Length: 85
Image (cartoon, rainbow, N blue to C red; front, side):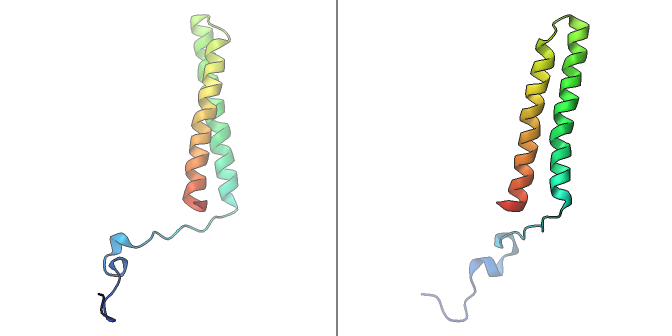
């Protein structure tokens, strides 16, 4: 049985304390949107360039766009979890 003066485990060890969440800022939405758009744009352009090199139009462009969406939404999910989870 715990004594009245005993501290909880998380009070004694700083590794077990819950992490403080950063305060969300208005720039969070702008940053997340730019990351999403940037990932889609960059990977689509890479796919378009590869299509022009290998004459596979439009398949690598579409693949790049889809991969960009996956990567962009993954980054968006990580950002949202950091602030709102």
